[in-house]
Length: 232
Image (cartoon, rainbow, N blue to C red; front, side, top):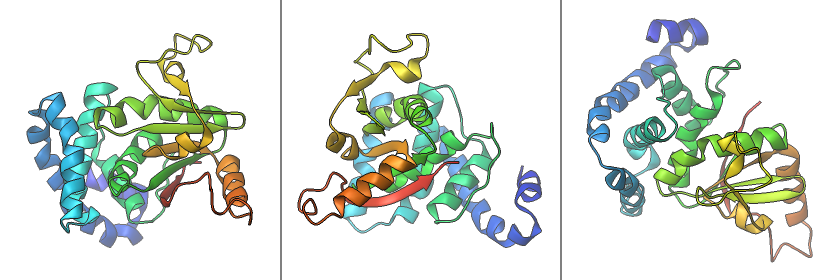
């Protein structure tokens, strides 16, 4: 697997890959432990991680367990399991670097790893797409993962904002596409206050400009931002 990864990233990144390999092995070693958890125990991991952060641990300390939790939640909810190369992509993104992946290689799934990890600090994390449709589909597809782990998901579009709610069914949505069905309309502010917010670049940019106008700076739409991932 790692030889395949090196072919993708190139020889110049060998040192970086070697530094990441032990983390990936640790995540893999945790897999049986997380598979043995009940749904309730897996969901409770989020509160445990937040408590450990409050007690002085760092996101890097929690990364192997947090990634293992996301991988297991994905397997149970949407039937997908993060491959080693996708774990590497998630680690690279968490480190603030660029991870280049081709269409079909799982960018949307990879993003769940650093998004969940960084959302543990209770600050806003954003997934930036190129249009409204991709934001809604991506968040609706990954929504069950976050919900199993006890986190909320919002999305913003040009004239629409919503929260992912598996108990809500939009009668106007295409009922054959579950990624589009469970979006409960909400205010812009509520969407931004979710643990994870998906949306197109133009909407995030416009909201940022609006919040920086003198007459709204005391009442911004955005919450405190911690991490933004751009998916192209």
